[in-house]
Image (cartoon, helix red, strand yellow):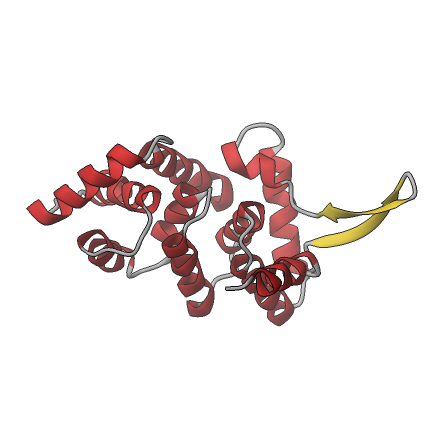
Length: 195
């Protein structure tokens, strides 16, 4: 993707219903309707953020909401990916959105653990797809580590020797403890978005 088309996908995401323009000190700035930082670590203001996301999902026109969520996932900015995960966990889900989450996992995102957690909760084919990915190549190490830990801890999956080798290799390159982050995040969002 060239830099011009990368700018286009970012601009498309910024033009979604998740943002509005506000004037601050004479300058136009983007105002985000979702507190993505609250979703990142699920601490400060997370209950209000989840309530705001649920309100968006309940009150916005579904086809526009799905289109705009897809725009968030097509962008490269992790903040947009995190907002999309929240919207999907709040009830907006489709095959196209789930497939786009897998695409983001493949190309990589700073929030790969949160994306892996989201697909583990929403995609009925998560186990099959994640095992295929771990056995192959083409996914970044952070994503592999996160999926492997989710499979092991949440689905009690055992790995083949080949998969274990891939996971071990990925762990040596993952300084973020992606597996731990993914499992913890999945556990917390499951209860936050269930209520």
